[in-house]
Every structure is written in structure tokens, then in C-alpha cells.
Length: 182
Image (cartoon, rainbow, N blue to C red; front, top):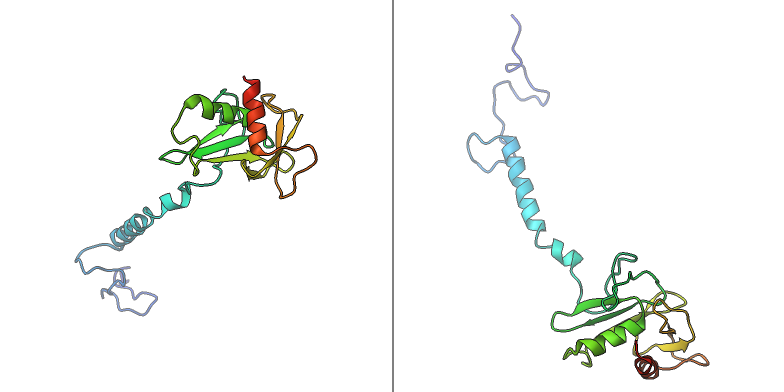
């Protein structure tokens, strides 16, 4: 007579028919290991859920992420695609980010919206360095006129403490663009 599989000793040397306590067991009689593993997976997933939004949450300051060629200018509706002349404004009670294809669009948008936080100290304006593409604080940048920009406002931003010959500061650039109109 051959022993059935149930009566055969297991490879760990535990006698056949003997139940061994599962280290994952919660003590519920009749609970299968698969049910216990499912419960542990559910608990692990529930523990991770509160952490996930923190990984993707906008910090509320600094330039936002631009989806080049997909995001559109808040003023003119054109795609934000030139990584050397784009601009962003962050402000308001929700610290929302508004994206623009040209610094001129950003300045006119601020003027046209008549929003109370437009001139607030914590309203941030960001521009791309026209040479490197890095984001610069627009109020600290210097601007070279005569550049070919997406909306033909003609100013390219530069960083650094020492202005280049022929460059102007933010206020001069802003006054020049707003005086021209468009």
C-alpha cells in the first residue's frame, strides 16, 4: 500500500498530518495563508497611500513643471515650446502656476487680469535664460533687446550679477514692452 500525499512527510521533517503555526497567522482559525498574505498586502497599500501625494505635490514656490509643446500660453493660447523664452507666473491664494510662451505675454496677462495679487511681493515671475534654458527669477534677471522671441516682444533673459553691455533690468524691459502694446 502506498502512502497518500497527505500522509507523506514534508521536506522540512515535519510529520505528515501535523499542522504548523504560520508566522503570519493572526490566530483566526481556518484562515488560509493566501488570505493572510492578501490582508498584509492591503495593509501595506493603505500605509503607502498617504505618502504618495507628497511625492507629486507642487511645492508652492519656484517654477512649475512645463510640458513642452503641450502646455499653452495663458494669454495667447499658443503652445509653450521654446525652452529659451518661456515664462511663468506663480501667485494668488492657491499659489497657482500660469505658463507663457514669451515674457511679454506674461506681463500683459498680469495687467489685463486685474488680479489683486499681481504686484504682491510673493508673486513669482520666472523666465528662461535665453542661452541655457535654466529658470531665472525674472525680477533679478537682465534682458537683452533685439532677440527673436515666440511673440516678437524681443527680450531674452540672462542671469548673473553683472549685466551684459546693452542689457536692461526688469523694470525697464517691462515698461518697454507695455508701452509698445499688443
